[in-house]
Length: 499
Image (tube, rainbow, N blue to C red; front, side, top):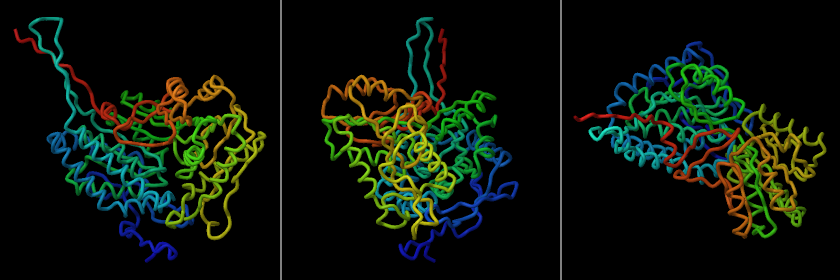
């Protein structure tokens, strides 16, 4: 059976069973309530599968399974053995990547060709990076000043049960970003994927068992944020929450964590500045600035949605960005010609369109895009073309608030002091970009911009060894780099009086 006869892509075997159940303690388990929900293909509005709607009782079962595994068989695995499991998992993800990427494309709309070209390296690279860290966790010996007859050292120990809550915009790689460091450090996981995109996470759970990881180490609870997600954040037997999503939900998670003072790391949203100077390589900057927003249909937390352009090149540059966006092929994620897929859901499409209307009402103008695409064959999907706003002011809502869609606000500037101030005039601090040939500008802005990442003459480049995260309302904690595993470990100090 073909999913779409035009593109000759076969339906994944994983979708043959309905509904998809929760994955608890190594077994498929229906939700205790028996309730399910539909997962929708945003390219055509069709139902892909029914998925179990987990809630608080299911979260409690999964947390208990994770605790048993943490205190039981998983605690006996040596660092080398954990490393071997992660490396085997990387091989399995590599072997099944066509299937995993197809599940992501079907469920959240990203172009399949882009997923297979870009996300493959990101997924496998992250797993192998964490495998390397599994055998590199160590404490310190400390020369003691309290007594000459005292020996002191520190030990790094896994924090325990981790509740991982991820968004829809990169389901597989986001899951790996949470599960990888947990496996490396010896933690166990209850993963709550976004209700809009759960399928690849469920399939990944099967591969984790096949890799030799004991049952209960990784559990997957599908469902909604207000039920399953909230229960996970509140659960007293969860030692840490690792969350990626909006700052509104992040604030609720912090409040929910107070019960047992669980550790929390948050990778939240952004309204990132992308600054283009007149001396930049403009050909490179046009493409980089455009795809810094339009890539993944704008559903990227660190997207450079505030595009500051030096006034002398402003009109030319934003016209080129608008044309670049208009020339991108918008279509079904399975079509190999597609460069920009749909947004993930009707709800998200309506939210983005409401922001576009707000912008127009406040006096901004669209240079391109701005309206839902309703011509055949896209009419049943949730398609919105790349949209460029001009005539914007810093106090407009479209400039201040995260839209999470293919929408960019183009803003002129005159001086370095001015753009430095305006770039930082946001409650967020996740990403930022600088386009210039002048090394003085690079070093000054790289130091002064209040953001977790600064990309220079590029945008949204990722590497497993480089930390990623935000400041201010964009959260705290880092994912990637050796710093990542620190948030999954406790430090214990040991004092030995050998007199």
